[in-house]
Structure formats: structure tokens, C-alpha cells
Image 1: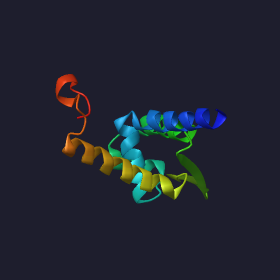
Image 2 (image 1 turned 180 degrees about the vertical axis):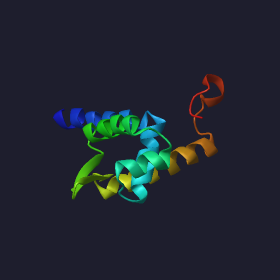
Image 3 (image 1 turned 90 degrees about the vertical axis):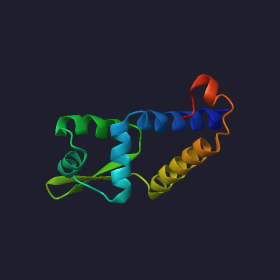
Image 4 (image 1 turned 120 degrees about the vertical axis):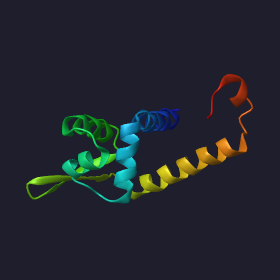
Length: 112
């Protein structure tokens, strides 16, 4: 039972991180390469303050880590497997949408 509870907690944290488009964009950017906050803010076209809040959420979820580099901090995915998981999740969602395997999609407007 403890394993199931911890699995659910892990998935819920991942879901919370993916629930915001900016956090998704951050994760995708960090999948490509580690980056400093100023560079991420410029890349995403958002303020550093807003980026900082999203990075804090991603750190709290355990998905990114802050790595000190001299006087600066670089961010990267906490584990390289997260990049693969993001790719797998994206391709699975695209495949399901293309296959229209969700029988409720048309009626309920979900799974789109």
C-alpha cells in the first residue's frame, strides 16, 4: 500500500509540473540542455521573477536541480530519464489523439 501511495504522489507531482504551459516549456528547454535562469527567461520571453517562481515549483516537484557554477546557478533536469519520459509522454498523447481511441472524446470534448 505504501508503494502505491508513493507512486501516486510521484505522478501527482509530475502532473502538477506539467499543468502549466510555462513549466512545460521550461522542461522542454532543459531537456535540450542545462541553462542559466537569465537565458531561460530570454528564451521563453518571460520575466525573471515569473521564471523564478516556476523553477521553484519544478524544484519542489523534484524535476529540476540548481547547480552552482561559480557565482551563477545553472538549472538542469534532475535525471536524464525525465527527458525520455517527456518525449514518451508527448508521443503517446499524440498517438492517442491521432488514433481517437478515447470513445468519449467527441461527446465529452476531452482527450483533445
